[in-house]
Length: 413
Ligand SMILES: Nc1ncnc2c1ncn2[C@@H]1O[C@H](COP(=O)(O)OP(=O)(O)O)[C@@H](O)[C@H]1O
Ligand SMILES: [Mg+2]
View (cartoon, helix red, strand yellow):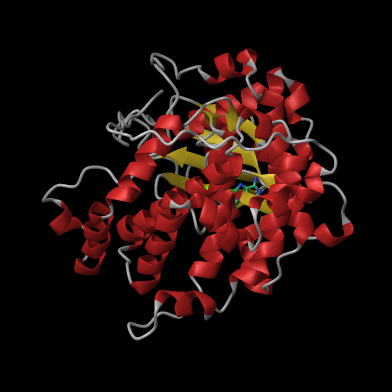
């Protein structure tokens, strides 16, 4: 990295890059709140009221095999340019206006008429089904259009200059190996999480199975949580442009169930973070005492999955266990949420403990968890879509005794 971007040099940088001119007059710049730890984000408002979001990746030279984030978003943008048929959907239309690989800087048009979906849900406590349906349809459209298409896969295999890509990153990872250094880095409360995680053999083995059966077959967002989805401020009056999916920094060739699972976990997070927990209350009771009960979220969760299957019914032919895998990936995403709370926010308490129990159920007994999460069976979820499409009956896999499983820490495919 040659240049370290700051509010002092950003305007000069934009002028040098030809993104604004000195005649544009005084501009307003502010650091964007709620940004991730890896990136430095600045919002610049130009004199003509155009707004640009400028991002710089601070530690782009990581060597852990995970893709360079801003490069991935740039690659996705290039893909949409090269294959315009993909970018025709307004919800994923291109936003990137500039990429500087040498300095790891990416500039996006900022959509000031939109707000984060997480904020809409949080501030208004409403969960409109049409928003969830729009997300399901958009996501299915992307997965369906790229499914098993070699040209897109090859494109997404492009590596940053001077580097090689040996395979696609497998995001189905459990908690990595834990050494004595853990005592110095996490709080005493948080140690409970690692102790429990290691005690649950069934959990580790379910994650290992999931990682093993991870099947990269289409373009996936890979970080589809509610704050990476924007919703138009006038969504009630619009039929189109309701939502925008942003933050394509983790996108890659991946497993479609991973995206839906991550999103489902984000919805479940609203419920779980509102739990009333106390050592004197049983978990079951806590789950029912939530300030945002699961029943309030269920119509949106069901609308999401139904819209997805409606727009991409073939997924059930390709993977008859698709819904179960979505549930399992949701469990895994909850575990990742807990890890993030521990490492970034140094936080772990009874709420996270409950989250771990729920995550375990989703991963270990997904067929039963479907009933709890959706409030209905898989066939009931699918009955509205089944009237239009004829689905094959799920074939029960032979119960073979598994005597060996790949460790979850495997990367690549
Ligand atoms: N093009 C955009 N239009 C409007 N808001 C945006 C846009 N891009 C990002 N944001 C806002 O900035 C936040 C952080 O941007 P994001 O790309 O998700 O970065 P991070 O990697 O920090 O999560 C988003 O959650 C969203 O609220
Ligand atoms: Mg984000």
